[in-house]
Amino acid sequence: MEVTYHGHSVLEIQANGKTIFIDPFITGNGQCDLKAEDVKLDVILLTHGHSDHVGDTIQLAKDNDALVVAPFELANYLGTKGLNVHPMHIGGSHEFDFGKVKFTQAFHGSSFEEEDGTIVYTGMPAGILFTADNQTIYHAGDTALFSDMKMYGERHVIDAAFLPIGDNFTMGPEDAAAAAEWLKAKTVVPIHYNTFPVIEQDPEHFVSLLNSGNGQILKAGEKLSL
Image (cartoon, rainbow, N blue to C red; front, side):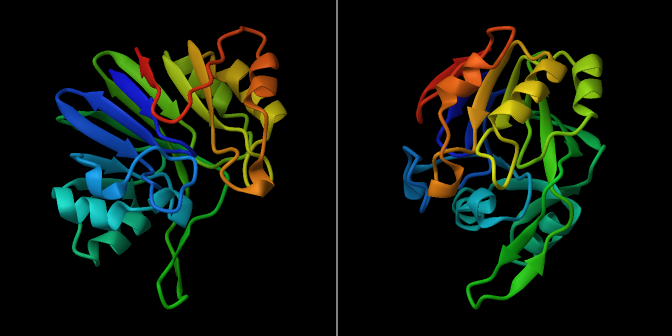
């Protein structure tokens, strides 16, 4: 499995001959190295409905005839936009031809704002455990620290954990470091920081907090081969 970081919380995964994106917030993302019109993909996985995570999903899914996998309410909402969706929910997993997706809990919110300003509730937010080629990554989504992360670390061998460190809306560096210790991931990558002034953080500081020395800072466009 190969994972490329594209800024904020955007991950691109190459697995089983498929291109999978998690939370493709590209347009309007000053940290991203991509242009939405150039992106080719097969699958989109979404953690929750906020605009900095759903991002370009609707257009990308239509342009690429892609499958969108998301928590139930968000998936059903996107289905009304004509997308091919697979609804799931917290604690559930499913084997796809591209890999296994399991949704975990996340402590945050989830809503989508229509162009006219209407707010649509999109269910519970989630994290994602994605497994392919006998390797597992954990994308925590937007979340606070919560103790069940200990269980994830005990029940899963996590090759790479992608954890938000931006604070204000999610965990800050100190809480994310505690999460990393509980998860016992082989590699820990900070995400969801420096996109907006309110979530500015020093990723080097976060890495310095990790007792196991397994932190890796990725710039937009850099790859992690597992």
